[in-house]
Length: 191
Image (tube, rainbow, N blue to C red; front, side, top):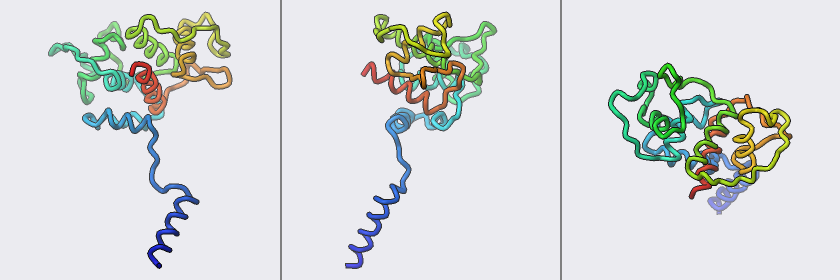
């Protein structure tokens, strides 16, 4: 009788106070599944802002593809990070660019409009006839003359990225969790 009472008390405490165990959402759990072999880069999910190397890792993890990389082909500023071939494979595939001085600048912060451009570039590479209902949208802080207007509208119309109160905040930073969420949504398009 005492055991039942203790078990009932514990169950009631869990129900009324919430589960004491850390809750995993689907984006983080899929990210941990995909990074099972490369656990050194799981830090991306906890970052307040992401940098170019994080985006290159995400491209290589979420959209893997075999790429031939020469021995001395990887730029020197990528060789000091774990898994430099993962980083450079996104460059070889055309998703990320090398700067004219032959550097990658892996620690450069990625803004929201840059993320929209990179994801739109990938989507249009995979599916050139992608139709995301490109209608004129009212975005307060992104005029139609802005060079990244079409990729931003494409990401918002397809539901990958969102605007808050008709504002996109194009120069805002992208957190690691948001980047993982964006890549998950793009991956869901092609499953």
